[in-house]
Length: 461
Image 1 (tube, one colour):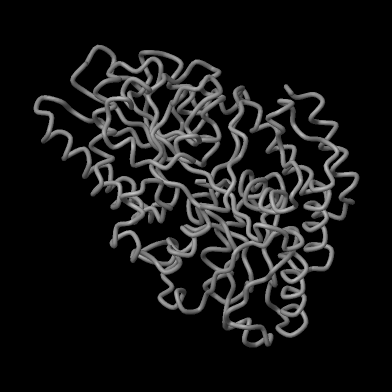
Image 2 (image 1 turned 30 degrees about the vertical axis):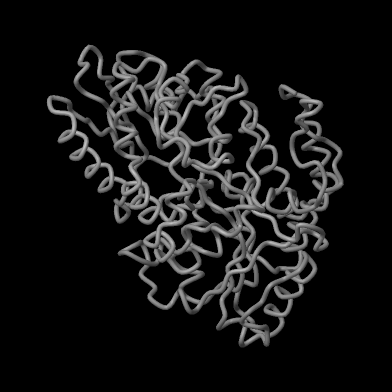
């Protein structure tokens, strides 16, 4: 997602980080001891209660998800007399949330009935036997036809079955500060046609507006998916080469010139000091700094970032910034040489999934149907700054007028790509982060790409 994300996903919501099927002993012990906020405990034999596990932001200022689910809970209980909803918020960084939910789903005693699941983790959790297919429910649900095919595919597993109901997606592009651009003599309607024009704009800012960070591209291991997906893959998928995975040969791609070119772009940003200082760029909290300091305080000219970024500055978000909608512009991320289709984006997203060991799976899907009435779907996409995955929501005036830039980012959907939804992807993502970190700290693109290729050999192909 959605991105993502550094451990500080709490504020900037730079979207999801990777997960691992095996937990470090220290984390496993902490989970067993209930160290993370949110307790386990499945519905067990209580067929009248549905338990909903979801990730609560670690920033206590962000509570829109809690408010939304509390409202849906009241609706559901009114519509289903005698039935109860127990919300199980898990307040933790993204990786720890995934680990906690996986632990809960292992036993019928602790499995929730419904869980919020990142699409890029869905196949690994299916492979572990944690989730159940929803096809029988979906076939009888009249709203399923409103969902666009790309969103349905994101929740579909290798076995052809669907294991989650998506509630939105996101896209990515370039945010730029018009005030900084004016000082640098750059146009307010800036729309770079290729990577060279993007780098030239960053160099112009560096030369004419000293003290400002020209360009941020998330990088390194600590940023997780914010670096791998939001930084690197936004570049890689714009090279025109086979990106990460070849579905024809069913192999992860190695030796790609596009991979080296994407790494070389990152190397250029940091070697020419066009980006943040490497110590800041490799800080797990870089997304927080960007959203609450660099952008609103005029310290950053260009950010390669997501559609949701404005959520930080409105509706009593972490950093109120009333002027953001006029101070900032948006531009599509261009392809490497401006080759067709000229623009590139990456999309993520989350789904609502039912664990294989849920005690009340039918009741859980009834809750999904209440949560996904058109009215509620619009309300959620507006509150969470999501890009709509339903045709009826995408055409709704409330959605279309919800935030400056929403039309722009919705317009990137035809140019977007999704990560390979395969169980080994989290390992690939980590390897990408390591390659990015290498070039950020001075290593060559060729050596970083070779190290990545070597790691692929040890992964399931």
